[in-house]
Structure formats: structure tokens, C-alpha cells
Image 1: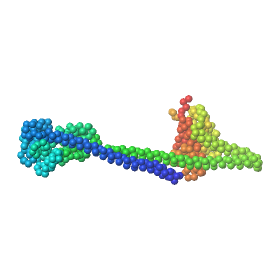
Image 2: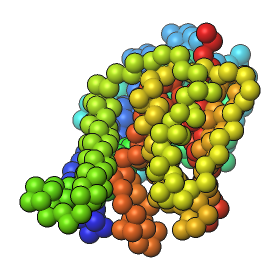
Image 3: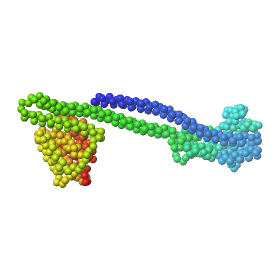
Length: 510
């Protein structure tokens, strides 16, 4: 049986886990590919948002340049008015200045509220020559120079007769807060956390949220026109890595849940298969035992009937003895067949109990008297302890008689070789009537006690199953009959000390 169960288990595990393993590997591979694609799209989206912010700063600076690059004299009232408007409307601009490329002296310098301050020197030489080359190609490039807290924007003007350089001194942090801040806040849309920070000190200059966030967790890029500063972005709630980890965690939970369900299902199937195999073995043993039990009375009946038919009796008084044996063995066969038929009816749910009020003070002694010859034949001492008050149960007489027969039969078959004793007691409780059948036989082990009410089960201690004849149906019939009467049966037993079976009936209120 163990080899059969092992083979079935291996085949079942292969059938179950091979497709699951293939599915999981395929699903996890596809999941990783999908996540990589989503992360690429996400990173590109974030990069486009950062580009949009940089583009906004370029638009502002390009507007400043186009406003100043006019064909008017740098010292004229017109230029003074234009520069003044830029200073008024853009608080981050500290100075606007003009100088000839080949001259160290500025042509004109415009400051906020005419405040005085040192003019930042813009670079000369090769960088300026490149800007001039761009102008010749009709492209105006704006260069930047970092100076303390200022960012110097400078470019070669197109609309001047002489090669003129314009420079705009911008307070960097003020520009970020006042010019880029509103645009960043609008772009974030309450979905992203965007922060501008110093790339060296990591100090956050502007952020869409007040909560502190490690800038290392952000996808970052440098601000085009403000060297030394970078802008970073991330999802406001969680990063892609966090979402992937959460999804992976959920996937693992689902995977383990699936594995647990499959394992429990496999165990359940294997357990049922094992149960069916054991049941098949018990049925095989039942058929063997019943065949053996039937063969003995049939052989006796056939032998004595043959003797009587052929008139081989030497003494006529033996005729009654042979007829008694034939009658006794016929009753055994009838009881055996009836037991099997009753069991079959109970299994199919077709047995009908004809219940009636049964007075136990009369019923139990009568049942015991009907089995008195059986007790005397096996030298069993039988006692009956009944209460003085009459007790009634609502039951089927024939079925309850069969219950007592099975219990008495077991008490005799599994009793001691000498000094066999059976005691019947009737107890009345508040809600139940309890009848106890106790013997002083060999008892039942704890291992067997869990299964003795199962169909076809027989204790296998030593050669007990072979030495004591039986079908394994008696106690199962007892349990089924008790359940059919709304009652129950239980047993208390110790090895070599005997057993006590308790029949519990519901109280008959009538």
C-alpha cells in the first residue's frame, strides 16, 4: 500500500507543480519585462517634465535678451526705459550692462533703484569669439558664468553697429523661487515632488512639498542656465522601485498562498486516496472474513443434513441433536445476512426505524434473557443494574436489540479466557438516558480506539484479527443506529482492563 501511495503522490505532485512552475517562471519573466518597460516610460516622462522646466527658464532668459537686443543706443533713454522695465518686472535681475567686445570699459550699466555695485567682469577671448561666430550664422547663443550668489548671462547683440556684449546679473536663488517656482508648482500637479537644490551642498532651494526628502532618491538633471544647481523629481507617494517592490511583495504573497492551497489540495487528495486504499483493503478483509464465517455453518449444516438424509444415525436420540445444530447454524447465517443487509440499508439511507415508547425496566432484562444461552455457553457472568423508576426511550425495538447483540457479541469474543463478566447499567440524566455495557475483556488500545466505529475496521494487535472471527461491521452498525435515534455511542477502555460502551439516548419527554 505504501508503494502505491508513494507512486500516486509523486505523479500527483508532478502533474500539479510542473504546470504551476512553468506558469510562474513565464509570468515572472513577463512581469520583469513589463516593469522594465514601465520604468523606461516613467523615466522618460520625468525627464520630459524636467526639460519643460528648463525650457521655461530658457524662454524667460530669451525674452530678456530679445527685449534688450534692439537697434538703439545703449545709453539712450529708450534703452534705459527697457532695462528699467526688466528690472522692475523681474526682481531677480540685479544689473544689466553693455560693453564693447574689445573694450574693458562698459558702455552702460543699469541697476535696480540706481544702486551701485561692482560690475561683474564677463570673460573675453575664445568664448566671445565663438559667440561672434554664432551671430554670423544668425544664431544668438546665451552663455552663463557663476559668480558667488549671482549668475551672469551674456550674449553678443545682433542689432548693434559695433560688436557689443550684453550681460545680465541674476540673483540665482531669487530667480529659482520667483520665476521657476510657480511653473514647477504647476507642473507637479500634486502628483510629483520636484525640488531644486545646490549640487554641492545638497541644500534644497525650492520644493513643491515641505516634507524633507533625500535628493538622492530623485531623478535629477542640471539647470541649463544656472551651473551648480540641479532639479530633481519623483512620484509624490512612492517611487517606481517602491511600487515594484510592493507589487513583488504582493506577488510573493499570492504565490505562497497559491502554493499553500495547492499543497493542502494535494494533501487532501492523497489523504482521500490513502483512505480509499485502506477502505479497499478493509473491504477485501471483510469479504474474506465473511466468507470464512459463512463457510463454517454451511459446512456443519451440509454435514448434518447429509447424515440425516442418508439415515446414517446409529442412535435416534442423535437426530434431535443434529437438528438443533442445523437450526442454530441457520440462525447464525440468518443473523449474519441480516447484519449485512441492515448495514447496506443504513449506508444507502434506506433503513426506516419504527420507533415506539420502550420501557427499559422490561426491555433490557428481556434482551439479556434472549441471549442467556449464548452467555451460558461461553461461561459469562452477566449482571443488570436498573433504576427503580421506570424509564422510557423512543426507539425501534429490533434495531436496539441488534445494538445490544453486537455489544454482547464483542464482550464475549474479546473477553478473557476465564472469568468473563458483562454488566449492564441504566442511568438517567437531565437531558439523556445512558445505558452502559461494560466488560472485563482484553480492552482496546488508544490507536485502535479512534477507528473501531469505522466500517470494516478490526483491531490487528498480534493475531487477534485472525484468532477472533468478525466482519468489522458490528460497532459501525451500533453507531449508525444510535445516530438514527438522535443519540450517540462512546467507549472508555484500557488494555487488559476491559471496555465500557455508553449508549446515549435523548430523553423521552412523554
